[in-house]
View 1 (cartoon, helix red, strand yellow):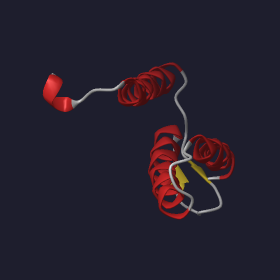
View 2 (cartoon, rainbow, N blue to C red; view 1 turned 60 degrees about the vertical axis):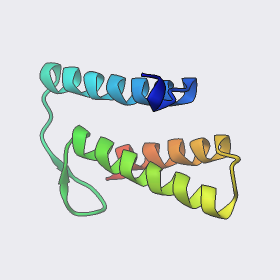
View 3 (cartoon, rainbow, N blue to C red; view 1 turned 180 degrees about the vertical axis):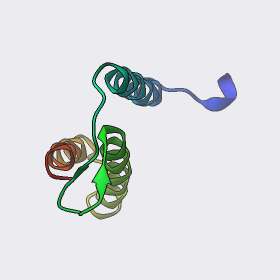
View 4 (tube, rainbow, N blue to C red; view 1 turned 90 degrees about the horizontal axis):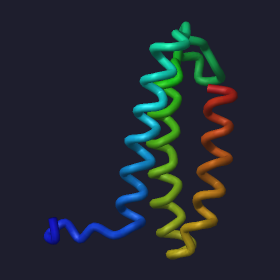
Length: 90
């Protein structure tokens, strides 16, 4: 696996994504959820909101990298605020 150039930040990223998918799968089985309508006026479930959050966070990080530079820990704070807003209001 040397050709993949695994670093600890890369490994942590994939571990977090895999953990989120596992946790949300367990939640879906243990606590089934009915879709709800939020500010976007579309029906979303927990999984939909997770997908919207991950997609939006990718765009936030790309924009941050292009506008601010490589100071990414602050982008994480913005992404966490964005995630809280998505899970609350979408």
